[in-house]
Length: 121
Image (tube, rainbow, N blue to C red; front, side):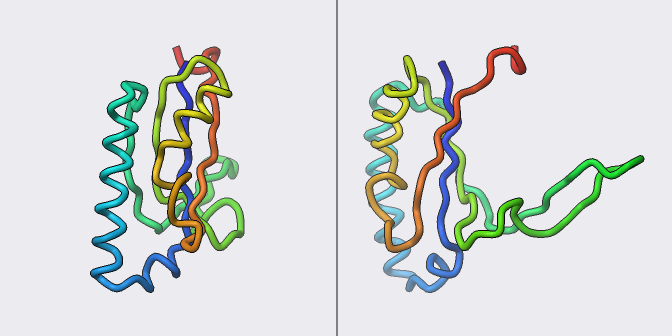
């Protein structure tokens, strides 16, 4: 079963890092990503820009608003798709991702959601 992991972070805290701090963080992340990839359960992983546009139904055409859907300091900064047997296995696999192991001071977190087989076949 596939699981979508939304990787959250605080853009202001990330932006406050020096170039050297950011490069050191990237080096750590690449090592953790390689470890996760080696399990064979990493399907895809991508970083995202912090800017957000939300579309909502609004009559004849969608309403476009700037900003994240939820009003929080943290924003989605990446998506990861993993393969796991069940939710417990997804938690185990996702715990290998950098956002679950480092970056607490940057507001990092992972949200794990199972794919709905009924909607995406």
